[in-house]
Length: 152
Image (tube, rainbow, N blue to C red; front, side, top):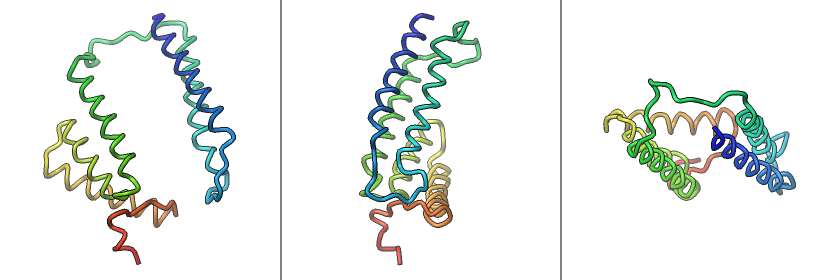
C-alpha cells in the first residue's frame, strides 16, 4: 500500500511540474476561444485530483481474482502500445493523420486479437471518419501529410 501512495505522490509532483511549465505558454495565434494552454492544464488538474485521492484514500486498492495478472505478456503489450503511440506522435505531421492512424491502428488492433482484414477495414474507415469529423465538422485542422494532394 505504501508503494501505491508513493507512486501517486511522485506522479502528483510530475503533474505539478508540468502545470508550472504549461502555465506561461502563449501561442502566436489561437483558434480556440480559451487558448492552447487550457486543455493541458485541465487534464493535469483532473489528473492531480485523482492522484490526491489515490495518495490519501483510506484503504488500499487490492487486485480481485477476475483481473488479469500483470505478467510478461501484459507488460509486453503495454510496452508495444507505448511504442506505437510514440511512432504515431513522430509520424503525425509528416505522414498525416489518416496514414499515421492506419499505420498505428492496425498493429494495435492486431495486438489485442483483431483479424487482419477486419483490422484494416475498421481502422481505415475510422481514420477517415475521424479526419472528416475533426477537420470538416468541428473545424479542428488536422494534417493530411502525404495525402495533401487530395485537398482542394
